[in-house]
Length: 292
Image (cartoon, rainbow, N blue to C red):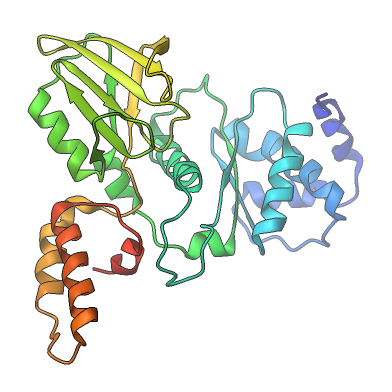
């Protein structure tokens, strides 16, 4: 049940008008924090009154990940129907922990980055989103806006595509070849058919080409490999948050690091990681090389 009909009651609340005017003017506004259950109500009202009419997203930064999730779960009750509400989550690992992040979390983060990158092209008919995140989520390395714009590609039905260029682009974006596409970040080719699983999608996508023209775009079940519906367009995003198309320059920098003092087993692991970077793979611990 939507409670957005209660938003006009905010106008009668002492201090709300000053907060809204300050946010609209881009000023720093200090206000007494409301009780936790009332915060989604206040944020939904500010978005409806200030940022949404300007077709601008509202980004809410919470101190902790659990508080961000509570805000994210509470906002749909008060936001006007149709308002996109997204969570930019923190990775489920500690800084410098060398394990692969949850692909679901990676997909949610990339979905938000793609939405923000396309913000200037968002039509007036598309409502501005509310994005909720935390300090820890913002501390994790990710792509710059320019990198995200470079790496994102929209493919439509009827568009002409050069197969070799498409496959090369998928490799540069960190997708791994697979005989059967079953997990996010994989792709495969069979003749004029390309299967890929963008992390931002809940299901993998099948592109069928007739010559060099996109004849159909379908989502399919990764378990049965059967199509489940058609789409008019497909947004291809990177498979991870690292710009792997810069791997040649990164590889050269890392290769020149002195390794003479390393133990044999450490040196072997180092060389294995360099080989994976050279091949453009997304692997556990890749985020440690983000500064390069």
